[in-house]
Length: 163
Ligand SMILES: [Zn+2]
Image (cartoon, rainbow, N blue to C red; front, side, top):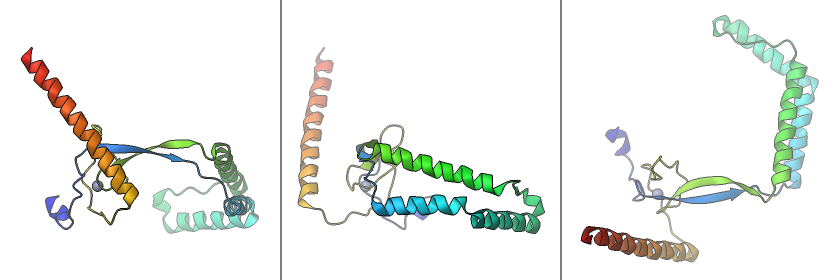
């Protein structure tokens, strides 16, 4: 594994504590709505059912050993998928601007990373580029808070040892 990783330089944030950021559902635009309506119409069209059936049949004939499924009713399948698309869009519509979820970012480079169980950033590529003044300000605040935390933790440990 070391040989594959040697090709790129790891971000110094690898193995350090991550930060949590939240994402919100963005507002639906007229383009989003048009795309959604076109998708639903497409899934409900006889052309979709016909093409999907031909595709599955061709695959099944070419590779009978793959166990590729040819459905009985492709129009019902299209309707099922159209309904899933409608449900997904309804969910988005109801949650516009609302809290979506959280994700971990590297505290050094700000890249989205899948945090390990201990909340540490896995080894990842160094992709740092120039920073904005806002980012520099936030970085300084983070360092000041972490320095204060370090002092507090050291004082606490020193007190425990005195006891
Ligand atoms: Zn990083």
